[in-house]
Amino acid sequence: MSILPMNKIPSSKKLIYTRIAEQGVVSKAELLSAFSFTSSSLTRLLDDMVAEQLLITSGLGPSSGGRRPILYEINPGYGYFFGLEISRRYSTLGFFDMKMNPMSLIRWRMDEAMTPGQLVEYVSNNIRSIIQDHKLEKQQVIGIGVGAVGPLDRQKGVVLRPLNFPAAGWKDVPICAMLEERNGIPAQLENGANAALLGEHWSMRSEKLQHMLYVHAGVGLRSAMMSYGQIVHGSIDMEGSIGQMIIQTDGPRLEEHGNYGALEAFVSVQALEKQARTHVKMGRSELILDSLTSPEKINYDTLLHAVSQNNPYARELLMQSAAYFGIGLANLLNVFHPEKIVLGGVLVSSTEQFYQTAIEIARKNTYYYPDYQPSFSKGQLREDAVATGSALMVWKGMEI
Image 1: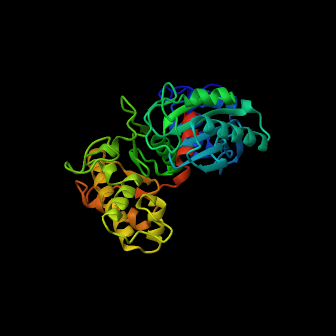
Image 2 (image 1 turned 90 degrees about the vertical axis):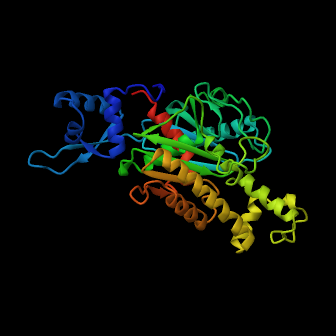
Image 3 (image 1 turned 180 degrees about the vertical axis):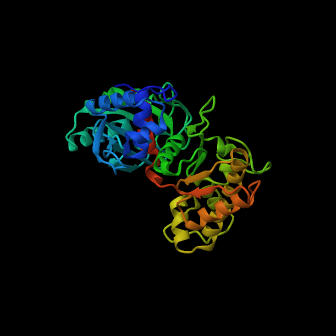
């Protein structure tokens, strides 16, 4: 078994397998109505897939006049996948069966010690422990999907020049080669926003969504788009480009890089920290706590704590950020017109008011409103979306 490019035309077996996986439990009659196979050809394919242990039979369905039909589902134990999220604040390692059921999830804080080498060592130790705990052989693991902060070179499996990692060394990191060498398992790279969108789309597959948008607001701003059920890739990795959307031509610039007046200068963890520190230095002391002696000690956790204590200044700062976020979302909606927008990241999860303010402003500034009213969601997988989608990416590229 090997991992193929996701854009390769699927085989007949892969088409059937994917359909059964998406539906859960399927009869032969349902497959005949969905595909142009003859009854005999489909029977042979199903028999072969059961013999190969790709599929299992799961009883008999209700009769429509004749014999009760055999029901098929995918074999969850045919193979396994790891999904790894590499992000700036937290990272996650997930272990999944063929049905994308999470069998193990480990989440840890990214700090100054978590260099690329340390991360690979930590992940590899956990991979070995998880395989042992589940009494499996390494050969049963089909691959490791990696969803990472960009920019990336997906084909080469390299993390290029991400900003704002706490640890040093996160530049031109051949993460896939490092994981493969350490674990002996194939690895595949995708940007984290795309991986999250893949995961959330899978979790919502019963809704049969075709056009989706994912936007992550946290240490940085990241986005991904899906059209006709497929991730849209640009000629370069464009995960973080939403942060450079100009919303105020004479506005500030974040950390002396990027565009002036870009969205990330108003909606990001760094932007909030920078504004709070600047305002305290100018005399606004509402945020200074007894344990803090310097404005430079104010960070995002300080702001969240102040919001939880109903601090009016901290809440005002957060709501201003939510309003700008809503404007940025409206710009995206007016260009892409998705059916559903999934919002994630620590800012979105900070307070319900942040989320509601952002989507209210986005709707009010959407062209064709109220005739066009996309739905918003925080997603079903939420903080596990990237790890799940990374594993799913390997599943989708699997040769059958």
